[in-house]
Image (cartoon, rainbow, N blue to C red; front, side, top):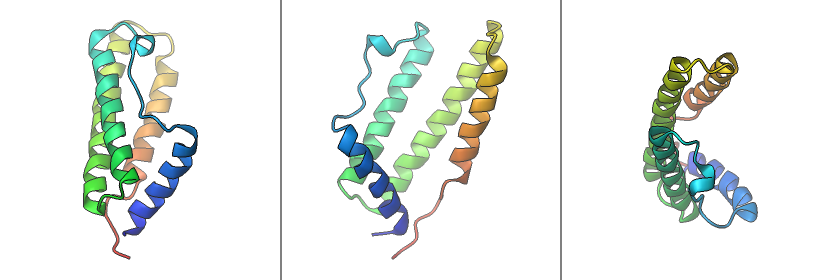
Length: 117
């Protein structure tokens, strides 16, 4: 098993001690903007796929593909969400942008390859 998967599995199993069930989307999660709600649901589905791959001990390349999908969906989502917030004059836009930058930096600094071990 590669080191990347091993680290991710350790994180996941720590998380699984608290959250056994997959992340579920329901109307209490809705923000009331159809496109954003749909994106949130798609992100949750992708996170659940990653979670399942890690829990099942899938190969490193399979986990990498799922992680890259989550990262790309997150990038697309925050860009879309920020555009809507700006269009509607959201007063907390500066804070949103700061948090977005932290998230994008985190996504870009994650390992993007699998090391064999």
